[in-house]
Length: 483
Ligand SMILES: CC[C@H]1O[C@@H](n2cnc3c(N)ncnc32)[C@H](O)[C@@H]1O
Image 1: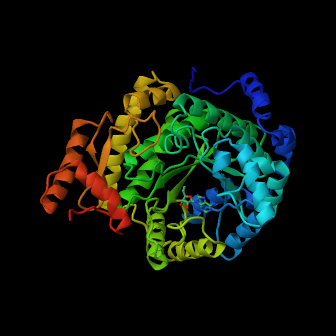
Image 2 (image 1 turned 90 degrees about the vertical axis):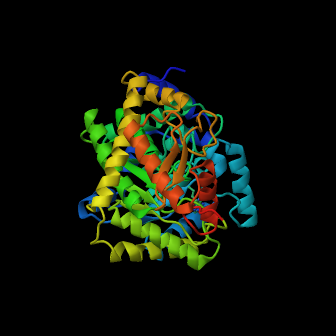
């Protein structure tokens, strides 16, 4: 299929929309004009982008959990508990895995079984099967803005129902919801599907309804060098803005070295602004999201609060606009509402205690941010060159060439040649570039950082360091030291 980074024409979009709305019976309840009117009836204080914009102005860090259960009345109770007891500033609705794979028949079975047993038999909220009216029951029952969070390569119908259902923010992207989440979906297909999603949101914007969009920052969440996850976030922001999206939250998953994590957020925000402006999207609003530790969690709940609080502190010190909060049940599965609220309150404590502090102007942070921005520039320049100026085409070619290469990704379209490892301070460095087009100077920088670790550990730089770093997390460490 031929893709290009160009706004979909109304003819093409509405022709495709006919097919999309027929993918499941609940699609027939979606009426664009009626949904625009419904969205316009949602007050400003319940709009995701409005709350984010205020936080950017105030320099505060908002807290948001992940949460989703199968039965919609329980889902409402859960979200009410998280905004009241958990003090969440922003609410999620995490979608179940069947829906993410477009397996709506199985989602329906899960709903039926959940009603029969009175227990949630799905690992998230099956918004698509419930449809517009039940989604509106959920979103209208809450005081806070609500966002749909998921991991769906083809989310076209889910977008239609979610926005018509009163959600005012939507996570995902054609790269970030493909490479970490699927094996066989081609990049062309998921970029095209997400151009549909972003065009729909562009049409809402043109009708006077602003919807926030959030590319999924962490990707595989395992030793992903900040330059790579940041480059993907910038690409998805540019592709979204091309379709008319006006409100973007770019994100990053905590890697563990505090200086590097703060630098990652700072470089992400400034480079997103730089490239959006370069493409003349100067009216697109930008906010940032920091995801608390995406790696393995300790089983021990007290230790997990240490990880959660560390992630909250890093987010606040990086002046991220919001932080996605983990729970003390992370190691075991879907959290209880109490555990979810506990993670939120620990994070809220850090956010309020550290609000007046920032690490952004520390020389070490600025130096690390310069490195990350230089690396992002090498990658994005190559995407530009490969696509001859078209970033959609360039992205597909970049993955084929390994110019974009995400470590430990399941997708067969990902080269998997680049290998990361931590340096002696736990920062993510590049042990082997694969085809990531870093300059010689940057390659040397990474080599020197890994040589420092090798000297400290009295061993040669090797792939064994990568293996040790992956296993270190489960043992409660960051750097995988030799036995
Ligand atoms: C991106 C992966 C993250 O999403 C979390 N997650 C997935 N589904 C749910 C869920 N239904 N409720 C709360 N957290 C959830 C999971 O624990 C992991 O931290």
